Image (cartoon, rainbow, N blue to C red):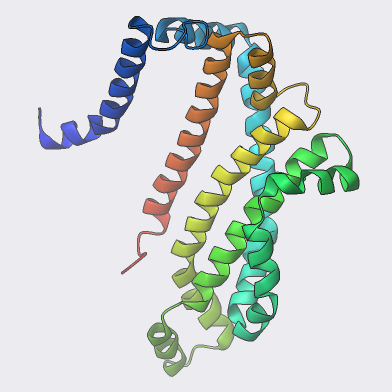
Amino acid sequence: MSRGRFEAWTPAIGAIAFVALWWTVYRLRLIDPVLLPSPEDSLRAIWSGFVGGALLHDFLVTVRRTLLAFAIAVAISVPLGIVLGSSPKLYRGCEFVIDFFRSTPTSALFPLFLVILGVGEATKIAVAAFGASLLILFNTAYGVMNARKTRQAAAKAMGASPGRVMVEVTLLESLPQTFVGMRAGVSFALVIVIVAEMFIGSTDGLGQRVINAQAVFNMPEMYATIFGAGVLGYTLNLLFIVIERNFVHWGGK
């Protein structure tokens, strides 16, 4: 096997080792089989859930909520981050508020959002968008503030207007850091959406499905749903890595 082909299959090694460890623990009965079903049972639950449509429906609902929350976060935080990053004094004036809420567990704000928006779809999306927006805002502002001064100075020396320097130099320089924030933001939005589905009166979504399966000790379905959430998170992260490598290839150069 060539080196390139081996490297392409490297990520599968960890997955295979994980399943092998799981199967070994199950066979040796190190954990009660009621609590830890076999990999085969969980795989059958995943298959029947997606083929039957029930798990697929909840999966798509969570995807929709996550992407909508992320889109709202990007639409608000990227322009605001650019404005704050362009003015260090303005950023320092807002720094305490940004860092305070960024350091506060978003789940602790659920009651606040419930009081304001009530129990419904808007609350789940809003709280996820709020948590993701802080990560994106911080990274966007940081990227703008740390754009390379030499390239900005060179552009100004060649007669570029302030607006052109901002668009063609500063923003391009800040994009790698902005994408770091967006990648972290979409993963965080997924986490908050699933937690919100567990505790904020949901009738669908992966979070609600996990809680319902756990309540009736349907462990294969619970693990199948957890794996569905894990695959979703991994896929979103991988997607942003691919986009970053192809569209922000100048990062660090």
